[in-house]
Length: 77
Image (cartoon, one colour):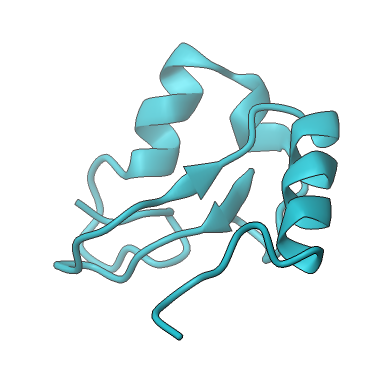
C-alpha cells in the first residue's frame, strides 16, 4: 500500500486516505510536503517500518520539536 496519493502511481487506497477516512483532519493538515497530510515520516512502496502521522497541527509541531531535539530519529545511525 502506498503512503500518500502524491506518491501513488497505481491509484487506489493509500495509508493517508485510510487514516483520513477515520480522522478527516489528517488530510487537510499541512504536512512537510504537499499532498502528504500529517506525515512526519512515510515509507516508499514495498518498504516496511514505522510511519509517523500527526492528527492535528499541535501534534505535528510537538513531533517536529521532538525530532529537532533528537528524540525522534529517522533511519539507522
